[in-house]
Every structure is written in structure tokens, then in C-alpha cells.
Length: 364
Image (tube, rainbow, N blue to C red):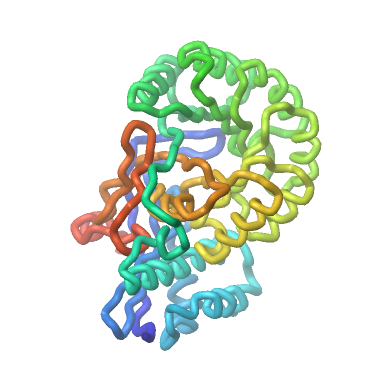
């Protein structure tokens, strides 16, 4: 089998406006690629953005990766991964745009392999049997919601069957965050898992002070409290807090995860298949976490479509985040019932995009 065509694309999915401590958007971006073979099999891969930088990712695939792919056997996925990593793009960027573009390509190759095998990706990766995947809901906890809206949405999530919810913090005055967390914990009760996400914006002193104060509300974890490149500060914070540290959304390589894990600066590994360079590297990070007996709970830049397969095939991945932004985009959208994701049965990686959605929302 040979790759005969590489077609990058950008899709913008409209969503209700959301905000965290430094992002605000009404668009979920899906820059990606269709990879066609001489056997007529087309694999689809994509990464996830908030609608910015999509053109850079598309151009990286078109200008630097397509020429490497043409004529290759897609089953040589590890060889291709290595060649893409050491392509000409390597010299101007080994993270961010470069790895996210490579993620889209790598996902498309795994999609091809699963389609040829006529198996869902989780089964190709060694998952033993269909199962439900526990999830927690992030969509009710955005920072632009009033306290009243926050409580209404959190209660709705619980009524739908979720036993874990996440909320955003990072207001300019941390006392306001404290009061919002207190209100949520009071509303949901002591038995619901509550995750707290800072989205990087605290400095070390703020994280030490308010991370300790928020322990009163027994959070399951404190997510991305500080700058993701500052491993030292996360290590010191992890030593002082009873609350586990979760991060990985803005780590782009297995080496970055290695350094965090070895420094004991992370306790929930949130590796995202659309941020590291695809499924090939995601599996390496998950295996590394397993060596340290750490759980993998992915950040879902893919909107659950791909990582539901990865979690289903990974013993140290107990749970998956849920944000239902792009369910209308896919031929076989993720299915969530009473807080559990139903393991997909269709061949492939779950990435096939509906033709009508593509026609309506593709960026020309």
C-alpha cells in the first residue's frame, strides 16, 4: 500500500462562547489532513485549536510533510514518524505547530491501519473487549459564567450522570475564585469529584497560597497552576500541597513529560494526542507514566474521538475528559450515557468527518 495524496484542511466548528483565565473563543478549530492510498483507503487526522494558528498547521503539513509522505507505506508509521520529526521543519520548531501538524498526520496513518484491519483503533492497539469509559465534565465550569450559571450547569451535569466535574479559576482576584469554588462544592456535595483548572496563570506565590486554601474543598486535582515550562515551581508546589498536580495540555514532547515525571512535579498525566506528535508519541508517554505508577487522564483537544480509543486500550488510563463541542462533525460521534463513554465499534480512529459538515464549515 502506498500513499498517493495528501490533502490538508481546516474546519471551524461554531460553539457557544467560552472563557478560561487566558482564552476566549466561540470557535473550535480542526486543522488536519486526509491521506489517501492506492488501495482507496482514506485516513483522517486532525488536531484541535481555538481557531488561531490553523493556517500555520495546515501549511506545515502541505509544505513540509506532504513530500515526505507521498509514496510511503502507511503501515511504516514509526519510520514515517521519525522522518517527519527530522524533516526541515525540525530546525525552526520542535513543539507547537510542528508537533500538532505531525499529530494530524500520525493520527491519519493509524486511522488507515485500523480501517484496513477492519477494527476500531482501541482493538488494534490491544484493548481486549468493549467497555464503558468513565468521564468527567468540563463544559459546565467556564470562567465567563456567573456563579448562578455555574451552579445551574454543574447540577445539570450531575443530573445527567457525571460523578466528576471541572471548573475554571484564574480571576484577577483569587478571593473571587475561592468563593466560586466554595459555592460549587456546597452545591454539588462532598461525593462528587471536583477538578480545579487554573490554565497556567498563577505565579508561584499565588499557587502556594491559594492552592493550599482551596484544599478545604477537597479537589481531585489542581490543573495547570503555573507556566508549563516551569518544572521547578511545579515540583515545589507538589511537595507542599495535598492536592495532586495535573498537567500536560501544553507539553508537546515525551521528553517534557519525562522531565516532569522524574522531577515528581506531576501526579495526573494529561497527555493530549493532538499536542504531542500523534498516537505514536502518546503511547510512549502513557507507557512512561505507567513505569511510575501514574494515571493518564488526557486533555481532549480531539473532543474525545481519538482518545476514547487510547484510553480503552491503556490500563493506567482510568478516565477521560468530556467537552461535547464537535459531536456534529463526525460520522461516528462519541456516545456518552450517564457520564460514561461507550467504547466505539466502528473500524478506524473515529476521525471521519461528515461530508455535509465539511462542506459547511471548511475554511477555504
